[in-house]
Length: 427
Image 1 (cartoon, rainbow, N blue to C red):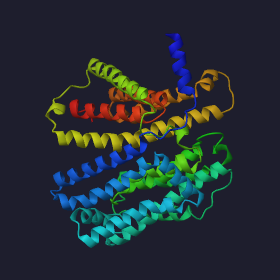
Image 2: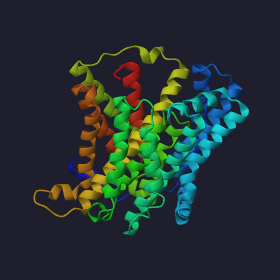
Image 3: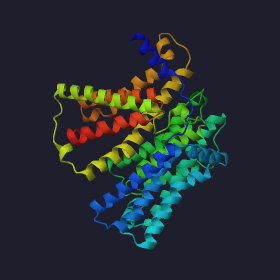
Image 4: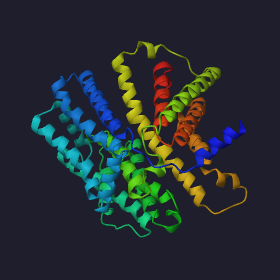
């Protein structure tokens, strides 16, 4: 038993092998089809739009979302590498370019679903300003912040300073957009604006040598990633397709602009082998047994029959949402981002007393620390939920570091969330 545990720990700490690309392109195509079907049925059910009218926004949504799954393929790696070799402007133009095309096609065809999304742009800029002004600011913010994040991350990889040209337009336009929200008196929106400014200030601090890369993913890189993704998150309620771009933008900066590559972050959505897939399902059933047993023992949740009453369409919608939206985004942030950041920072740190075990097992240390942080994020829902979330995060992280890909982590995250929401009504 001790030998098996030792082999598992050694495997967790070992560097990941190169991705072979098996099944990654097929998964990207399947994901696009599922997102298209989800958006099609969602528009049909929620807005009562006929199939033909819903097909156009569904196709654009699937295309925008495919940016993320494409980046996790050999073809996406080659495209990103060539684009960064040319300065990265092409990649920065993709989100605003597709959004502009989406709004333009909607205007030309009179698509009701697109027109309804476009109308919300009027609330993004000064009161009384037409929607096209909000669109113009939004597109500029997308381009500017993505270029800025890539420039800052690339500066860390080259050991030089980021060129200010691609960064300052995004900072100025992002600040203007954040401050010009009509409902800025709302505390939540003020928090968003304040967070944006804080991240920009911290991102500029990432140019300090003490925060630069020392052999891996550094705090400066993480800050550059955050400043890139946050504007997309802030705009997702008013800007069409913006919700599709935040995670791909983060991946572009984190994985590709830094030059560290997919293997360094275990960035793939498919298992490395059939054996890894089997172990992911075994871990899923084991963790569900532990979590459900503990939850019932704590007496803080009660089962309902929501899972059994849900229709096939509702279950399909939940699967797509919790795999492709919640699972992908949160696992990229917590597992690819934070776990890699902490493990690399521990490896690169100066030797100190009492830190021998942590230096020997940086990945294991990051696994427990990030699981604690994952639970802390859920603390507002109650201490019991925070404890369950921390244990669930431990299972997600174990699947991630043992399988050397996001497949197991996303699988566990999606299934546990679906059961928690449909069967236990936790959230």
